[in-house]
Image (cartoon, rainbow, N blue to C red; front, side):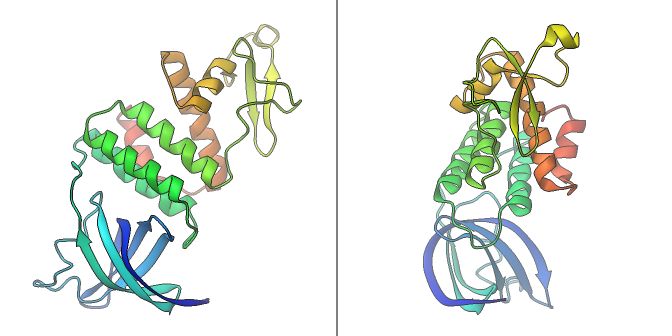
Length: 242
């Protein structure tokens, strides 16, 4: 596909992913503030003395430039701008999970400045040791809202306001249906109105809200990923961290 020719300089960006290209280069996926996810060839980046070799690192803020008219651009510059602690341990796995979500759900060159700011905040929180569950849920819901995949958290399918005292079942492509746990004999597969209100506010004070939000978000993401596997999520599930 041929797209408009452009020359971009000093664009705020993060490296999401890179793969070797030919003998000495890389193809990099950048998440940028004003242009969304951009793919570019970093020529010579694998050479021992390349200025890009020590700069193209994940989870570090960059100022990037590129040019070209094809969907695969040519990287012209990348500079580290510093000022962010790198996530460690389980938080590092969570950061890789954020990158994988963006790679799978965000189309190329679809700008979402609000999502970019949420990504920066999530990396800051992960680097500073913030609770992992809270950080991941907040980012996942910004991602779902920005990409148009988030269900309405204010009303159910009958257009009734979400009631904190009720329980709901999520139906793909429809929304939340009020349910009666007494009639069902169990709350399995249901989410409380309290949890939906917590998701809407980005605040997870109760253990029940955190647990229900995790399983609800997992179901919604799985539906929109259409069978695509998230490798980092499986690792985190195996470690009981997601």
